[in-house]
Length: 540
Image 1: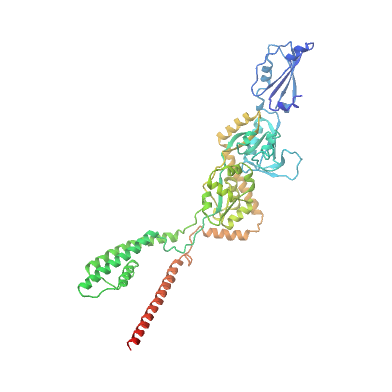
Image 2: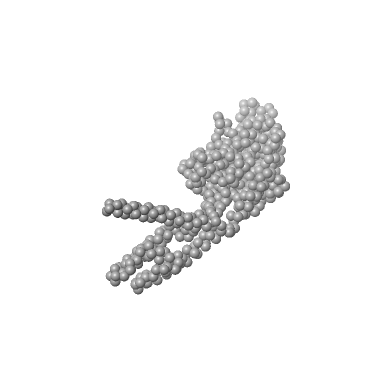
């Protein structure tokens, strides 16, 4: 009688009072009534002459079957009798079966999909694996004495908005009251119109996975010890010093009728002191000697600073900058980034569609939908980044590379907590929600959820490494080559031609400039000879 009435689905207690034999029908209509009670029992006063008994339905007692309860003494309130016997039934579900809908979201929920299905439209059968939510379900079931059945949405999506009035994904079964609650999910404004949400975990972070910073072979390593402004100041100082020395030496030579100096000789003298080359030219004046002495002191300081800085640059080789933020992605040329398609079927997709952040909008416009394995392969190939949740991608990368020195991937330190939180969803009006919330709060405050999450991730890493060790892979050769290159990037490298090529660039550049000047000199001399020859012919 009661279980066929859908409006009583969320009523913990249902009482139906029956009339006494021989009672006047008009009086019976006044006395006959059903009373629906939820978490709190009402105080009922019923005339014993009008009632002979009551039917009651306890929602989670004996799996929700109806019971008949005979009235006792009239002075005893019926509500008091039932409350004394069945006080707060949500503390003991008496083996009631709760239906749970869930999506795959490691480390919170993990399962394997089964090919064999039973045709139920509210969810597909799955084989559960060790995860944080499964541990919580087992703890709750043992504490509250209920059983559970976990299924995956048939369409295998999270669900962002209702389609033609019907919710898809994980929200649909709860909205249609086919499922009682869900495991891990994120709240959104549209979802909260169809279900209730209880916070359980702090939100995970979106991170960027790229290649680790690698050593950059800089062809200008020999000039990197000083910045551009220092080099410019040194060049200007040499020119000013040489011109000033040349001017006072030639002024004295003019006054004393001595030998004048060539400006190039003085310039080479200044550069010779700076480069620790013993010059052939010596100043004739005491003032010139003093200037040369101070220039030697300045050159000594410059030489010492350059040597120490050059040594530091060659020993600690410069590496490329890691990709830490979405802004870094947009600054890179010829760069791509991808995300797994399932991530955009839920709250993350809602965020990217509604965000007003220009960086996020530009990043979302060029976002590629790529599966996990292809994303990682493209990251290894270079010029690509992969956007993923921190917890599962950390497990994936750690499972593949037991040694950090062999790991080619870099997970950004800066994360993006796009969502408010993760938690469980409950169908509207679920009477057991308050009791679940109390247990959730106790588990969060005790810190056991963080401990379980770490344990689940560590166990999964060990299992994956064991499976990979026993399974030969086709890409072992290429992986070994990349690992060897990655190991080389982590230790000191013997300086080779590619590290010191700047010196040879200067060498060939200098010879090229000298050759051009030589050609110009030949042209000038040839022009002078030709002009002289023409003048001689004219004189004849």
